[in-house]
Amino acid sequence: MTMGEERGGNAAVDTVNGVARSRLDAIERELETMRRTQCAAHDERIARVEDRLGEMREGLAQLRGELRLWAAIIAVLVPAVTHVLTWILTRLP
Image (cartoon, rainbow, N blue to C red; front, top):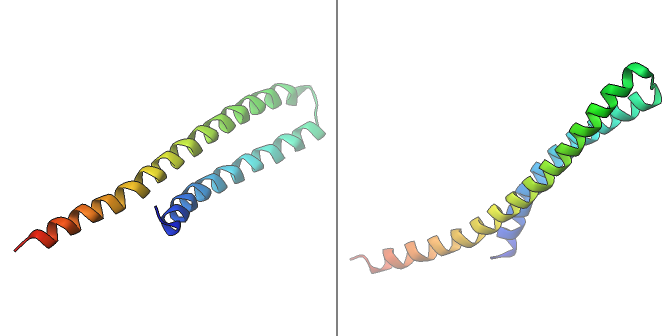
């Protein structure tokens, strides 16, 4: 795997991670606002948002792992397929 291929795979992971992290940050800011203005009506909503935020963090961690795996697979397969196709094409009359 070349450095460019590795960076390309990581860039895709970083992009998805950045978008998801941005959304999580927005939810955390909203949650912090609710905590500052906390009243009895907000308690239940805060608990639900905290639960959902935890689920989203777990999902993001899993997604990051899967994206890194796919990026690594693609980074290995593309040069291999290119090599095989080049070999085949050089053998054609």
